[in-house]
Length: 201
Length: 150
Image (cartoon, rainbow over all chains, first blue to last red):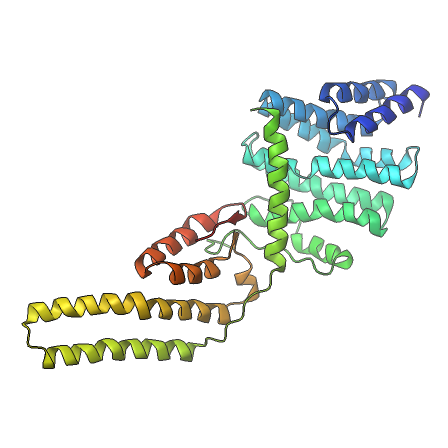
């Protein structure tokens, strides 16, 4: 990591954790960090996320959905980048928590606001959520602290699959992930399909 | 659409997650009302109505038209009082026998069976049935968890 990239990334991380920080100002820092090192996937991820927020603000639903796809495409690379970055485990955990908190609610948001074609949104989002949890687990192991960040997107993916069960998910069975979550959180149970009077399985 | 929608949505999202966790982990009531007890209540209802019919048409000095009117009023009164109690027992019987998986699929708080019991205790019989029908076939069919008190 070069000096310029480190400076911009440190400043960007501080701005991201500040709820009162200006969105454009934070985005500019991530852009600068990405320019200093185009391989910095963490900067790419958060630049896409801040772009998504800005586009939602302007009411540009289609571009916001594309920004979400850009976030999904650089997920695994961004996690690897955080793992290999400088800084202690606490700092890395904070960055990962920001990634999980940023990424996890978006699929439901896009579906609820009808901002993308339903099939792409739900299926792509569910696969992305499983990939996010799996990537964190692969890079950071099964440490209890990091497992909290692993299970959160998995739980959301399972909830989405159970709610919107009409869509295909490349053969992924939520039951497999339920078993994995229960090794960490034995009290977790799979949410049921929508409603008391449900037609179909 | 403005920025507030995303921030507002996040609050709504985390509320949904809390409701989902609540629904998965809430303690289910286990009433002791069995099929036999429901049949007993139904039998008592039939005896109450049948007995009144016999008494009315044997003893009453009025003509058929007036007797029928009195009978109808009596049936409505019985349904509004005893009928509501019977309806609560039928729902409790469902709660007794239904599987945990089936009872936890409800997307509303309170659950539909708890809602039905609360309705029968609070409102008249036919209005309660109307509200319960709406809850089952309209409200509890969406994608989101809802807090819906009777």
